[in-house]
Image 1 (cartoon, protein in one colour):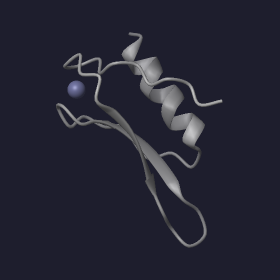
Image 2 (cartoon, protein in one colour):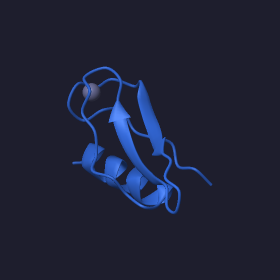
Image 3 (cartoon, helix red, strand yellow):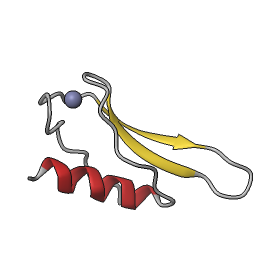
Length: 59
Ligand SMILES: [Zn+2]
């Protein structure tokens, strides 16, 4: 169900991490490159952060 995260579009790194930030009522998610530190904005849905990352990587 979880789509594979593409390599970083900026540095080409493959050490990509989906980060979950836990809150009381609603968690949120972002994707970050552990190599260069670039990250997406925060998303309510895990899937949205993955899509956003892969869309950026596909450009
Ligand atoms: Zn990177």
